[in-house]
Amino acid sequence: MITLTATAITHLKELLASQGATGNAGLRLHVEKGGCAGMQYTMRIDQGNDTDQVYTQGGVSVIIDAESHGFLQGSTIDYVDSLNDSGFKLENPNAVRSCGCGTSFEPKRD
Image 1 (cartoon, rainbow, N blue to C red):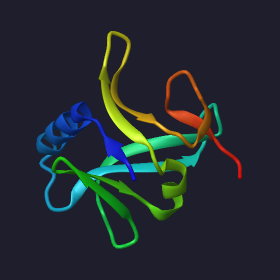
Image 2: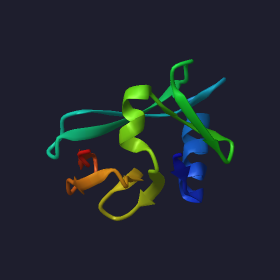
Image 3: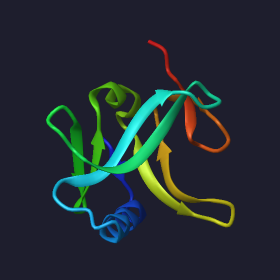
């Protein structure tokens, strides 16, 4: 399960509307090798497909491909707007450590 905060839902609705997103469009989360901690997050507006896991909350969807799902299971997505940074942020219980910018992480090992 992926959880969105109320603030993240509000900002994702605004983002989808501003981009004219239609149909089953949502926020796609993906994990790939890279970043300073070993794995990095990518996010974009996208359409879901049959192989994706889709979580819908508050009228918006988060789309995760099968390979990324294990890295993201149980995560919370928030939207932060601070003096230094703004954007969607992940709180990932599957991360042993994260880099300072919050876009990469080291996953737990089985």
